[in-house]
Image (cartoon, rainbow over all chains, first blue to last red; front, side, top):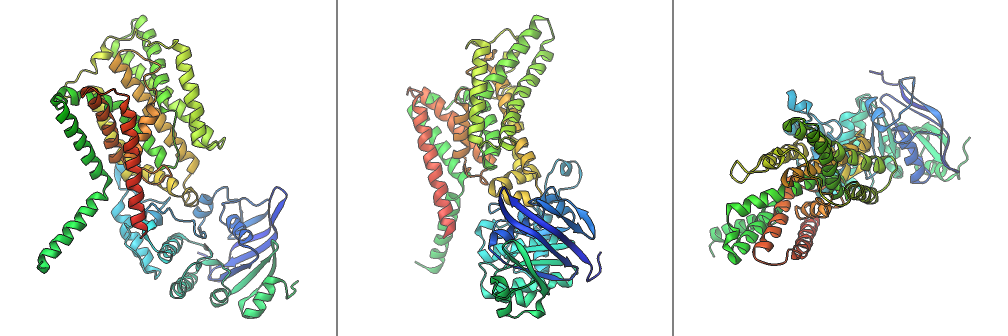
Length: 254
Length: 335
C-alpha cells in the first residue's frame, strides 16, 4: 500500500488524436495517495477522452502512463481494473436491465463453491448481501440489491455506480461528472463519499463542470483548454473567479 | 363495503395485476386457451397421440429458439439457424451414408453423425461470430449472409433432395418409449433445462444480459464482450446443428429444406416468450412456452381442418400481442 502523498498514477506527454482531429496534446498530470485532483475545463469530449485513456478504454496516440512509478500499457479496461483503477463513467456505466447487486459485481461475480462454481454458477445471495453492505459502508442510501437498475431514480443509479467503483478500487478512482443530474442533497452525499475515499488513502480524479463542487472537494486542480493541460495548481490558489478565468482563458497561464 | 372487504378486494386486484404482468402466466393461459379451443372444435386434439406429435415438432423449434434466446438477449439476431439446420443435417447424412456403406457399427455411425452435425452447426455459428465481432458487420446482415450461403450450399450438395442411406437404427431412435417422449425428445428437455440454468443462474447468462443491456458497461466492467458474443453465436449454431440431427433421426434422412423458415419460428418463439429485440430482456421459460404455442397452433390448425398456412397469420397476431404486452409493462414501469 502506498503511503499518503506517494504518486500513484501519473501520465506524461499524453496525446490522442482521431485521424487528423487532435483531442489531447502533451497532457501531464498525476494523482497521489489520499489526494483529490480536479479535472476541469474544455468541452466534455476532451475530458472524457482523457478519462478513457487513464482507464484503459482508449490507447493514447503517444505518451506514457505510470502506476506506482512503473510504466504501464493498458490494452483494455480490464487491465486497468486489475491494476486497481476504477472508473465511474458519465451516465453509461451501469447495465439497466440488471439488478443493483449484479451491477456492483459485474465482471467479478462470486460463484458458488465446488464444481458448479467452476462452471460459473453464481452465489446470488452472497452478492446481494455484500453489495448492500458495500454500498452502506461508503455512506450511500441504498435501494434493495435485487431491484433492477432501470427502476431506480437518477440519484440512486449514481449512488450505485459510485458505490461499485469505490468498493472495488484499490489505488485510484476516476469519477467522471459524478454529481451530474443530482439534487443538492444527493450531490452533497457524493462529495462526502469522495472525502471518505480520500481518507482511505486512495487517489481520486474528480471531473466536473460544477465549479463549487470542484473547489469544495479537491486538493489540486488541473485545467484543460483546447486539449492541453494549461494549469496544475493547489486548490487553495483558486477562488471561483480565478478558476473560471483560467478555464475560459481570460487569465493567462504559463 | 366493510373495510375488510375492500382490503381483500384491493389485495385481489393487486395479485391479479401482478399475474397479468407475469408473461409466463399469460403464455400459459394462451396455451391452455388454444388447447381448449382446438379440443372444442375437434375432440381428437386432446389425445396422447396429438400431444406426442406436438412434442416431436417442438424439439427442433425449441432447440434453435433457445440459441436465439441468448442471441436476442445479447442484443443481436441470428437469421442463419434455419439454413444451418438444413446444412448440418445434410452433411451429417452424407457422413452417415458413407460410414454405413463401409459397414461401420450403427451406434458409432449415429454418434459420428451427431458430432458432424454439431460440428457443422458450430462452425457456421463461429463464422457469424467472426463476421460480427471482427468484421464489425451488424448481426442482421452477417447472419443473413450465412443464411444464404448455408441454404445455397445444402441445395447445391444435394440437388434439393433428401440424403438417406444411413443406419436403420436412426429412425427407431425417434419412437416414443417414455409416455409421449422419444430419446431425442428427452435429450432436448434435459438440454433446454440445463442451458436455462446457465442463462439464469450462471455467469454465462449474466454476461449475456449485461452485453445486451449496455455493452459499454459490460466492457468497462472487464467482460471480454467479443469473446462472449463469439460463444453466444457458437452456441446458437451448435443448437441448430443438433436440430439438424434431430430432423435426421425423425425422418431417417437429411433434407436440405428441413430447417427452412426455422429462423422465423425461433424469433417468433423468443419474442412471444417476452424477449426484447433491443436486448437485455428475455426468459428461458418464455421461449419454451413460445415454442409450445407455435407447434400447438400448427398441429391444431391441421386437426380442425384449417389450411396450415393460417399458422403464419396466427403467429403474426401472437407476436403483435406479445410486443403490445411488453410495451404496456414497460410504460407502466416508467410511471
